[in-house]
Length: 106
Image (tube, rainbow, N blue to C red; front, top):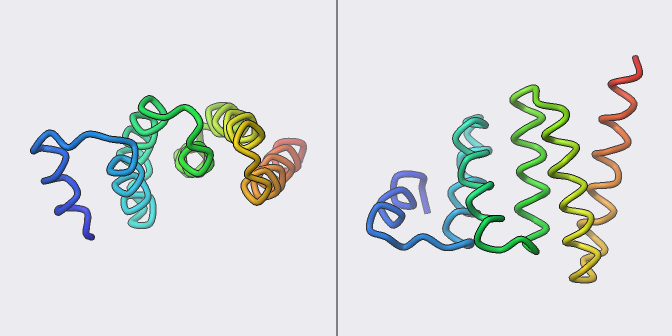
């Protein structure tokens, strides 16, 4: 589904975690990190255990240059993934955090 179709669903009042995640991901894939971040924040507002949304929120914040916000989102992703037993997201996010820390020490 494209961005405009997702926006139309949202405008009709179909506001839920899945819709916000889909819209946030589509926007992030289109290099619209600012708007993606807004929708991904709304997604985790609906479902704080949505580890994949936290992971993408970290990526959106990193693209925006907000390294502290990216780190915070990725830590929240680790917490959510641990609660759900989502080992794949845990591994991915640990790599993102290591790269972020490495980049900030150089």
